[in-house]
Image (cartoon, rainbow, N blue to C red; front, side):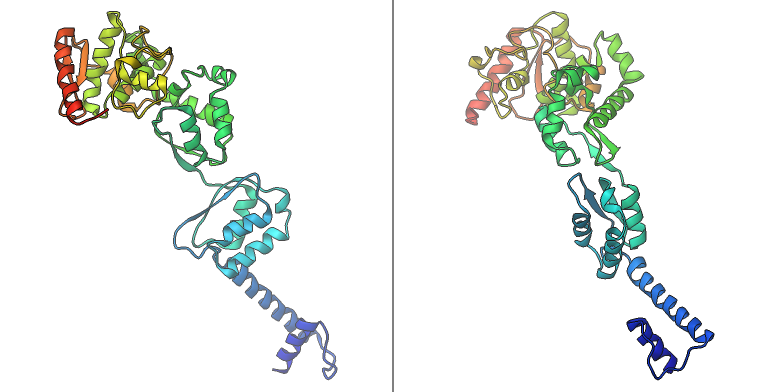
Length: 360
């Protein structure tokens, strides 16, 4: 106990009590050993204790504006006091503030301060699954992506509406939507806009390479043209089983040739996607997307086409229908007709159903 008291006093004050006799070599070894034990205990408590108190993996998002203090604050939201003390000590007593690496970092329940600090300092971030949605406009795409990536919506939108950027990727500002294939991709949260777009270009090429590309060529359509037609079909119906039938009808119109007369293109031209009825007065809108006034396909997709829509065009049903009208039972499917007279009868039934339900 005497030696232990001396050791404690020595370690706390750095002074040797007057009543203690001159230490021999063995005593100094005891002091050194005790000091090592205390240091080891502190290391175990503060450095090896798990940082996170959560039972599941937690994620820390570090962006360009973060400082060492803000990083500590972000981790501190879900941390143990001891583990967080160890991590904060490592962060503040290193050169971490000079080399803060952006990214999405996973902190597992059993990871101590040493492991977490090493991941942060070395930039060992964790990738994430990013889903490309089937949206109508590039503004909407930019807004959704900005909530999932470190990129802000203005940066994304600026790139998608920049002609030079689109041309480098093989598109223009009207066709760039065709580059995006709605799917989930493993990607880093802090990806740059250039790397993101190049990744989407590679995914597009991978999606089309082989069977799909060959089918499009046999139809004498480019992948972008297929996506453009698919985007219209997607807006016509949510019934995937009927999409190949609708694709066959539109392809028949293209081969006639006759205008596509697709109502969804009018909504896109007006940017009024909430319209439930397309009246004749709306069919004169001045726009290259007005498929009532312009023959052929519009300049580009009116949304990011679904995979089901794309495959519906590539595997369209061969028939001789030229007209279709939504069924009066509001089932989401259509009545098809070969002649205009037959189509007018179908349209009259649907109009009557709309009026009965007071749908404007």
